[in-house]
Length: 98
Image (cartoon, rainbow, N blue to C red; front, side):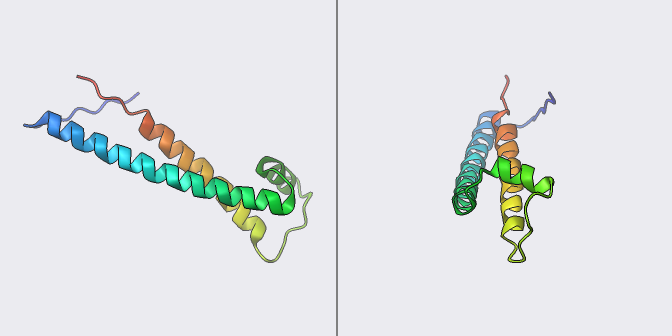
């Protein structure tokens, strides 16, 4: 794990600022995760497939690709969710040491 050291005149203020910024970013990412999961549930209900099953079948050319681009949107939403979750995990992994 990498370590970052900040030297400043008012470390408590800087720490509080960073903690608040991280908290806001995590909240924003969490909102994005919620919206993305909702969109995925819409696709799953419409096509009666879980996202995991859809991706597996799509990658194995078991599904006819639609020209209306919904499958592309579904794939994009699943990738978006993965990225958002990775970002949240990385921010939640930040620890402050004395």
